[in-house]
Length: 114
Image 1 (cartoon, helix red, strand yellow):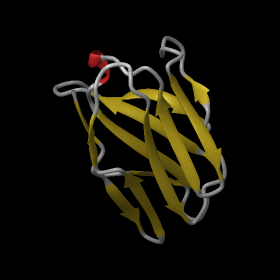
Image 2 (cartoon, one colour; image 1 turned 60 degrees about the horizontal axis):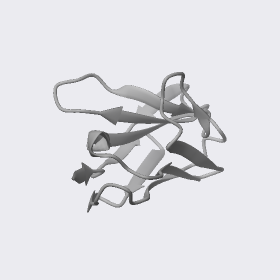
Image 3 (cartoon, one colour; image 1 turned 180 degrees about the vertical axis):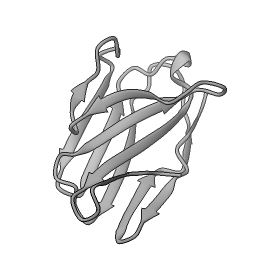
């Protein structure tokens, strides 16, 4: 499986850095994807998964709340400027692009990594 996470986004005074850029894993491993946001969005932070040819799917909102229907192997954590998406016991079907997104009061706009 190959996971793609290569994203750096910015909008005005907001910068989001997502790491690692990409990662090759085998089923059963635990995968962590991190986003660092400057300035801090508080807890207005979301994670998305996107498979080729599909629209992005919301996984985690408010930093740690899993959306209905999202398997419990997906979890979100963090606050302030640093957020982490963890996939415990990754499965082949989890291979996708993963995006982080934040809302900032300085411009009342969502900033989505590109």
